[in-house]
Length: 90
Image 1: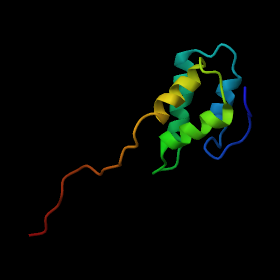
Image 2: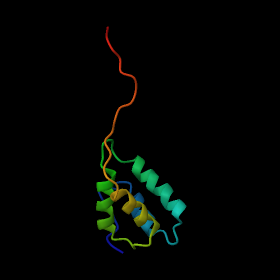
Image 3: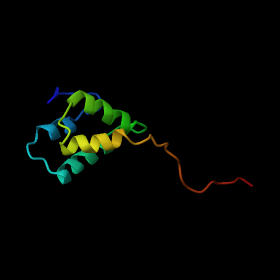
Image 4: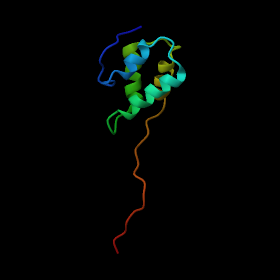
């Protein structure tokens, strides 16, 4: 496995710890992944961050965290849109 330690895209080391857990289940990896994703700063490109973490950790291709990160990295970026009613001043 690759370098494990602090990374700007994983400041709480959640992904790093996931790679350290032997026999990590897909469900547990998903829980850790969502915690990591929810902790990203607003406006962050999760796909780019995931790709950088894959390269940083060089985790085994069959690891559940690698699969989740790869799925995120392979998605096209989405644009944030505000939803709601527009107010017209009359």
